[in-house]
Amino acid sequence: MEYYELHPVTPQMRFINKAVEVLKNGGVIIYPTDTVYGIGCDIFNKEALERVYAIKQDAGTKLFSFICPNLKNIAKYAKVSDYAYRVMKKLLPGPYTFVLPAAHEVPKKLWTKRRTVGIRIPKNNIALTLASELGNPIVSTSVTTRKGEILFDPLEIQVIFNSQIDLMLSAGALEGKPSSIVDLSGEEPEIIREGAGDLSMFFV
Image 1 (tube, rainbow, N blue to C red):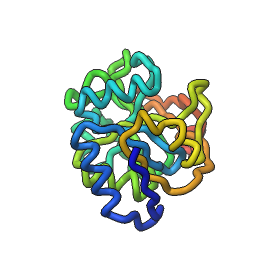
Image 2: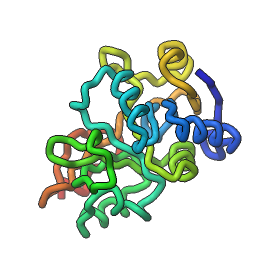
Image 3: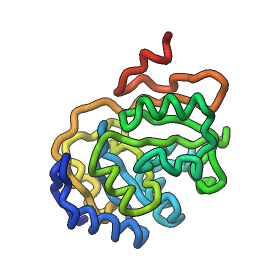
């Protein structure tokens, strides 16, 4: 595993570019978000996506979200109602995963049984710059132990995943909760997981 330490606010572009090159070549990386470290790949690389599922020891039953750099081209990846767009515009970038009806552009491997996808725009310059420079969304699934415990220490992560991951971008130890998951695919918003981020607007 290649390992690079980045400044969280002004990440060094030479390291971002190395990660982008790995992603474009079908690699799998670990990178920081505004909540926890994520395992990711280009959502349009089938073999890389299979590797991520294998690393997580998941047969495709869990929701894997993906990171977009902004809301500009969001309609390419999900069907967004006017209400959903207003909510996302208000809360993003931020520690939220929004569940929306999938657009055909997104690989079916990332669809749930209800044909929805999870979308993230984290408040983290490293993650956003990565997605922007790649030009495609990046898979985002939390870095955990086999028991499902979230790992926050980059050095511990490096040791555990050294043989499975091609490159890791470190921004130091992260201390946070996973993102809150809000389903906006139906007529009413549904809180799937209360994690990081203020959810008070959904309880009015």
